[in-house]
Length: 375
Figure 1 (cartoon, rainbow, N blue to C red):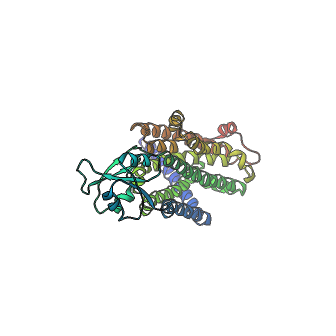
Figure 2: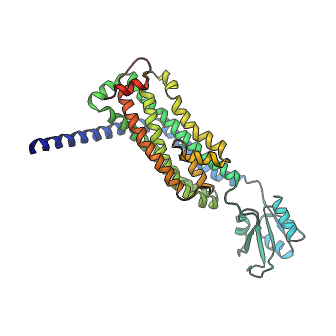
Figure 3: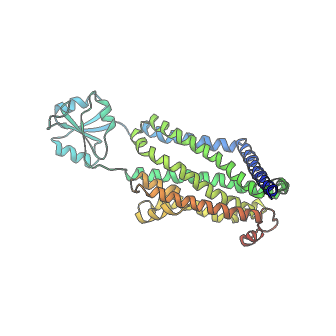
């Protein structure tokens, strides 16, 4: 009895080792195939150029000199050392009125409290006028008329960028997964592969291989973003964006793996490249949900709250809410737990459907038939 138990254990260990060895080989094959294509590097280069361009170009074409309202000769003399357009105001009330009307970018007025080291105070509308502060040899006190956490324009930009990155990577690499599966079916290579590699190892290897490629690119982009922002003089944006990027990356990883398993199934239920359009329509709709939902629903608190907990839109919606300061501390943890749970279920279901449809050729395989034919 002991010998039988030992033999069973050895067989189980051998089977387990064989599965993961096969998975590693498939993942390496997919990675090598992708990194040898020009499209992989061209797309990556476009993202890098886009990050640096969006951070640096606005500073190069920022709309001319900063306009400053001054009150009194002392304030005017201090501001004159910089390259500013000066508008004289009769008093502080008039300077603040010009600032609220956005006719000037900042105001410099006499310091009535006596606490400023240079005898003047700098007034900003919604944030600190850094260009004015950096031009002065000694930093005076700063007052903000209408403090704002994040402007509507900046929140829209972040929503658009998060959604765009998730959309492009999910569609680009997701479609590559589906095409890889269909190509193997169409050329009958899959029949050779499954003779030596377990079907589930084939699926797992594809998901891991493509996911590692995506994660590597996203990690590099995440590291390049702070560099680009610093070069572009966007230090305040970096301060706000840094913690959110730390959440966006793990959200992105879970969201991509969730969709990758569905892309693989979409490719396994058809036998021709021409049929991919119909089989991938559902997955495409799930990818479009965060893209359009977050962009057009970002000003609706209820919509954004719902999208933050829907697994397919949470990778974009929750980081956007966090960037705007609208999410409680516990919310991303709950949202990510829901996403992770959905991911596990999706991979298990995808594994069964993939196994039941991979070797079926001819017409499109119905999901019910694929489920019943699985091992």
